[in-house]
Every structure is written in structure tokens, then in C-alpha cells.
Length: 386
Image (cartoon, rainbow, N blue to C red; front, side, top):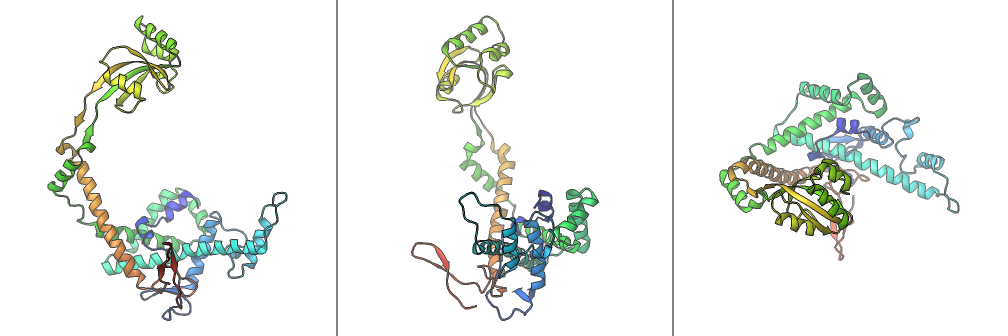
């Protein structure tokens, strides 16, 4: 799927993470035309098949292929899928056997299951979001949806022709796209409601954080340098003599230095903090006085000569200066705590309202198999009746 398409169809990541794939053990309350039921809302087989086609087109590269009815693997026998894979499979390397029909069928099955998981995730999360929005008294008007749709459309498809091409090749209708825009708007409104007022931070909280994390608001001593790095001590001494005779750092660095990062800038190396350079150079630099010509200093990289051009003393940012940063950090943490608590309750609540038909069961269905822990610590589904 293209980046443009991903941006256009992006569902709020916060809620996408909440609602994982659905599936279902046979819930008796699910109508015959349904694959799942969330509360009083039924996800029909027609809806599922519609979005399966869209997912398959996207997986195939974002464009409908000729014979689009065969894009979705034809479960459960996968006759067409196997035939297509046999036709398009690359020729095996010399001495290697051709893939068998059973191997192709496995590939088709895996492809189908992957698409099914994507679609069920989307459809179930859609019901969860709409249901939670209703319970929370959150809504978006058709006018708001249309406004957001036009804004997003303009950003993703500046040319109308590009949008029309997308409609033709994606398998999506205009209503499908606006439905996703609506879900995104509901997600954002729910998030805003959940975090409202959770960004309050007291002066004491700010002060306590500052006192516990003073080192985070400290700046170590930093030194600006001019350096020349050479392969040998002899070359370093030649460079040093040239500087002592009055030649410029720019000329000497360009002629002698093998340090590519600084040689074309006259050997300039700015804002060096203790511990950033090789140990021998680091020790020499922070023992040197400003303005002196020092070296050669032998290191694993070669021989340095240097001068310290500026010393910026270590400093400690005051509580007053650090307050805006700390306040923003703590407010964000408080909001995240509120979201985390909501996520847990949200999942438990809506999983408890989600019944799935046999053949579509995952651990996010109320009637999914219980997970048991093995002696090795792994988890496996316990056997249940559908």
C-alpha cells in the first residue's frame, strides 16, 4: 500500500492497538448472515467479504487485478489460488524440486488467514469505537466528517484525477472512505475526552521531579577546539611548526589533517564535552589552557595537535527555567496513565460484548478458547466447544 494511501486511511493508532483480530466460536446469538456480533450490532458476511476484497487488492499492490474475483484466496480448497501460484511461480533452481500443490495450498491458506485477521481487526475495532463513542456521549456530525474528508483528500490527493484513480483501483467506495474518516474523528474525540483535565501538574510535583533529576538539567563544561590529526608524529610536528610560523589553521588543517569532519573547516571542532573524544585526547584537551598550541598527542587514530579556542563552564538550569519542560513531561505522563487505564477497561468491556462465529475465533472474542500455561511457560489455547 502506498504511503499516500496509508496516510489517507490511517485509523487512530491508539484505537487500532485496542481492537485486535476477532474470530469466532459459534455464538448462538449470531444471525445466519453474520460472522460476529458486538453488542447489538452484527457484522455480516457481505460486509466481511467486501472488506476482504479491499484488503486483498491492497496486499496485491493497491490496484485491482484482472479477474479481481480471484484476488481473495478461494477458501477452503483454494483451487484458483493454487492454479495462479503454479502459473506465476519462478522456475526452481537447478536440482531443486518444484513446489507441490500442498505447499501452494499452505501459502494460499496463510495468505487468506492474514487477510481475514486484518479485516476482522478493522471491523471489530470499528464496532468497538462506535459503541464506546455512543456510551460516552461522543459523536461527529456528517458536516464534520465531510469537512475532515475534504481536508484529508486535499492533502493526500492534490489532483482530483489522482483521487478518482484511487477510487477505481482500491476497491473502496466513497462511503467506505468517509466511514474511515468518521472512525478517525470519533477516535480523536474519545481520546480528547479521556485525557481532558489529566494534564494538571502542581508546583510541588514539578519541584520534586526537578530535585530528583537535577543531572538532566545540567550542562557539562564544553570546549571549542581547532585540531589537526596526522598519521605520524613527524607530520604532526610539521603541522605544529607551520602554525607556529604564522600559517593559518585553515591552511594547515587542509594540508596536513586526515580528519575529514574538520579539515575543510579549518580544524574546527565545537562544543566538545568530557568523555566524547578518545581518552588520551580527552585528557589533554581538558587539562589544556585556552589559546595554547598543544601536542602531538598520540591516540589510536593518529597524532593530534590542538588549541582550545573557547571554554563554556558547566552550568545548572534553574528550576524556573526547567519548569515548562518538566510540566509538559509530567502532563504527558498523566495523560498516558489515564489512557492506559482506559485501554484495559475498554478491551475487557468490549471483548465481553463480542461473540464470534466458528471459524473466526481469536483471543479477542468473548467465546474464544481459554489460554492455559504449559510447564515450559508457553501459552496454548485450551480445547473448548464452539
